[in-house]
Image (cartoon, rainbow, N blue to C red; front, side, top):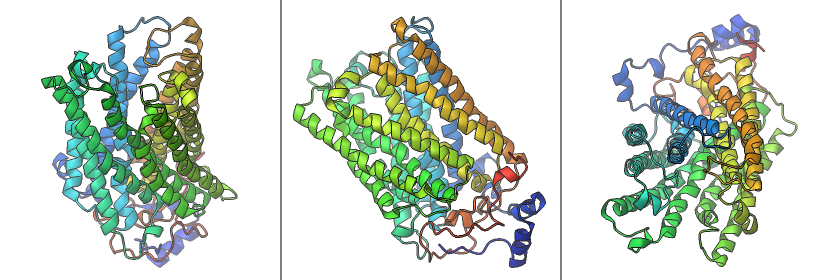
Length: 573
């Protein structure tokens, strides 16, 4: 891709190059522009009425961080309860509410919107050379729908929460639960519109607003991943919305959709719910796959091996994601023939995911690797994602799933994909693009420490749960035999380390906003249109329309004046 003119004159760039990596030279070259999106308007009104995709991304960042903290507090309560075999912290009904609200907050209000709504909103127009998304007002409306939906769910939380599990299985949720199921489901229903609005916006933006010369096979893989994610958001989310409407009608008016006592079929609910919820797994994980491609290319100084295969793998994952929902229902009464078909399809969906991992490994091979914090998260993602994927194949095998279904093995597998995958990708994205978002660099030492604690804490938390599940420990139980206690204590200890690892970035990111060294437009020496504009970007992203005449990830010798690894400025390791 061609590089639009920088904000420095040729003489200034030459002087910066001669300065090399000295602190004074870097600081002078990296000083941010006077006008950028953060100072384009002050006051809360300018933020609440903004249609700038970058500011909307920041609004989402603040929102999802808040709900991540809420979900994390519930996770802490769960692990404290499971320290001992007796239910000595919560009553059974209270424990049901705790793990339900943990799942609801983490899945619907953090994992699903985290990368698409935060990083996608901020970066996608920059990556394709656009001034904004196709529908700026719809973009703002998506955030308001998200907050309104979250408001209903928070209301139910403050009044005691819901005890059905995040899957809302009927007939318990539609007939027998006396908690605030309707308010929680309404919040998720409204939040679904936010997801649909974002998906529609991204699809139209990618189709219609690419810079001249930016063909489909010059697009960053981050954009391909978000395109596939948007297709799932638009096609799958309405199914969940319809399912929740039917749940409300049965709960409020006793119309028999799912309760067998009034002529309904509870297995129908499972079909409808998982037809959305398994593709929703890829709403959470596909954007992270795109992030990892960007990070690996930047820190190996190489084009992604098999670029077209990786791009088409994103689309294949989105397509196959709609065909495997039945593997959640092997023990729910579906026919042996249906179970066999879903088992085979589950094996097939592993192929495009494996393509990505093998191609990343081929890219890393003999690359000029820089072990920065984003690269640590990328490498950690690869290891955890592979474990999550392989254990997913085990659960997709009929004979094994019958034994492991509804045990802690499923909990561990799910978290290796969702936390080890989606959250590692999200953290990698924040660390990679933080200099672009804020114009500031963060602490090298503390960011390295945080990445290490997250990786170690995660494995200590969830790997023992594979063993627990194999031994027969059912999930969602807070009273268990004493022989399981040692593994639960290990898991709780790991959760403590993991919590510290997640908390540390909050402090050094906030500290960097005022005291961090200036980042310059391209501190990593990465390629891509987002790195060719200023940091932070101007209100309309580019001072001149960029023209693309090079292939994606066309890395050459790293420009010394532009590569400013944080470890040599201010916070050195």
